Length: 451
Ligand code: PMP
Image (cartoon, rainbow, N blue to C red):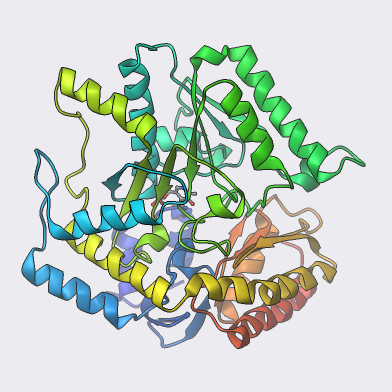
């Protein structure tokens, strides 16, 4: 691409190292500059309109251009634009949000800690688990079990939890003491003839075998997303979470539910933990907490986590952890208003009402000759495509995402899967519009020459 000199594109190409982007490809092709958003749509700087089929990054629950969030941010900026929460300082919005989240928790939780990103929340969760083990006089209880294809972030510790090779390769990760167990993907993981329940039992047996091999007294916690998101939208098979939790209870292992994507309605209940009867000791939250209008994340901990930590800190000194912007007042105020909108507009109910239609349109895509599998629940889903003849893994998915974008729908490819996670304010007709674009684009993908 030859960008106009001094254009946003040219300056972005010259100065900006992007996240999750091939820098050399960006140098050749330039960025897509998104200029503004309205409802489920965003507009680029040429005025072209796109459906944001991923709600940004699984996050803009209430849609773009929500004036109530703009107004509450403006008011909070004018009153107290910043304050911290170190050394016993606080402010109204953070206290209100902590109370609100504890009230919403699907299982008894006692305290909320605030961070700026999902990665930081998961990083903090593991640090608190380690601190707790030391507090309990069990310094050997430090290993964490995550899952292959789990996604928990990109800080050195949370990237270690993430079970995807691209987050480890060339970063010298994962850290020691972070282990990965079976991915509960039924289609690729089950033996021929094995039903979902039997496959779930098999996943739990493999978890138990890992625990026994490592020594149960060395395992501190298990972390998992109720539905795996960035690993390819993998909905757990029947009985999976029950079987996993039985094993964790047996060996006194804490359960961390990473609700960064599932939290606040995505699966049709306020939390994914409710959809799958998960009873976590720690929950991490971000994204739809503020609809990503502000960077904010939270982790909730129950008494069995909080009490030993509080006792230890009382003994050795204040907790040696905290971010400058932990519990930022503008982010907290925006989150409170965002949660009020989700409740007042019954967006969780909207997800439940629209899910059958969303899933039937998604499942219908399986008829396409290049489709391998459609997966989904609530308003989150993915279509896995077959790698076209000779195409490298992921190339077909990337080409599909590029065609979708050309046709006015922004989605993300995860390898050869295309993910769908529209804003929760979406209407039935807009779901049709979205999948009509997908169907037309898959037609084009079929006709295009192999990559
Ligand atoms: N956990 C999950 C389940 C996520 O999907 C993500 C982000 N996609 C993260 C953690 C990391 O969040 P962040 O990008 O805000 O660090």
